Image 1 (cartoon, rainbow, N blue to C red):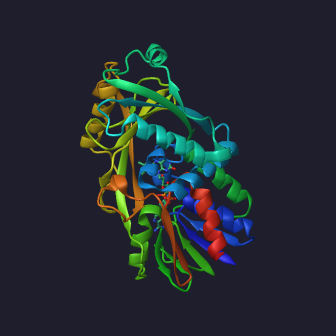
Image 2: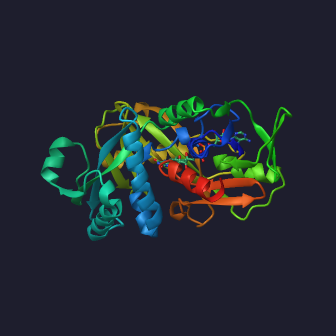
Image 3: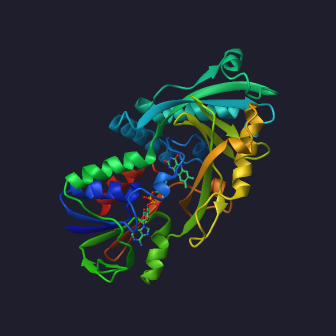
Length: 355
Ligand SMILES: Cc1cc2nc3c(=O)[nH]c(=O)nc-3n(C[C@H](O)[C@H](O)[C@H](O)COP(=O)(O)OP(=O)(O)OC[C@H]3O[C@@H](n4cnc5c(N)ncnc54)[C@H](O)[C@@H]3O)c2cc1C
């Protein structure tokens, strides 16, 4: 079959990879450069998503933990296992027993794909390693493992593999419209006919269908997430509750500096994808609450933002599902939602169902 793919983020690349494995002829259209949007602006974690257990997303967590192992094995240069600290304070919304059950479940769901099981840490030893960390009312510290990656380079590595396997990659080729019979019309006016078209345009998937007058049952909730980069070295990850909130945030090692994220701000597709000053201040304040190391605004050396293409499932974006849905309209197959970590599994499932 001749397959046309719209979108050169990690999901589009993984769908292309699975289509090639099935022996199809594949052309991928990307309006700008490959791996330059959501897939390059993530928290850069290959993770099961410990906190998704709170919303009973067991299927997703199990699949993500398996996929975490796949990516960790794929490139030891662009990925690595990372040990996380999870401190529990007397003031936390989640008591220690709940955290312990969550970590236990995380290990069980990882099964043979476990990196290193969780354990309780010695607070005195932790204090020696992180003397400036806030220990007031700290009751217990756990540690567990997940994966970290260079999201953009890992995707670009896959793109090189696809090109060498015969995938036609057309960058700077914005798609204007799709047709249910399987045609793609570019903004330049060129038209291409395929047996099947896969719309993997991430946050822009629904708007592309709307522009093409194709109705869909699934709808996207666009939730911006921002990160700041702080000029301080760090060698472990932290998952922490935002003070006085249900939300958690990450503090992560990042090329010799510290990455702090993320936020959840609902936005429209037309708004610029950019960290606002409120988000930057929010992340800095959350960091300063835990790290008493004198970091101020002047230590922030960068920031970035991306938009999560989430399924509409909850008023509170923090509780919205991170699952994905694949919908077929004529010869157009659209992907809604999905995580970076599960992109290969998504591609496999789509190929099994429709290619
Ligand atoms: C702040 C944040 C943190 C995250 N952290 C993590 C994490 O740590 N781990 C994890 O597993 N997941 C994470 N995610 C989720 C993950 O990043 C996304 O689910 C994933 O990257 C989506 O990939 P995609 O290919 O669907 O979308 P994208 O990467 O956005 O790719 C879609 C592509 O389609 C192109 N496109 C759009 N319209 C057109 C058109 N008309 N014609 C041609 N091309 C078009 C765009 O230019 C873009 O390149 C995070 C997301 C955000 C926003």
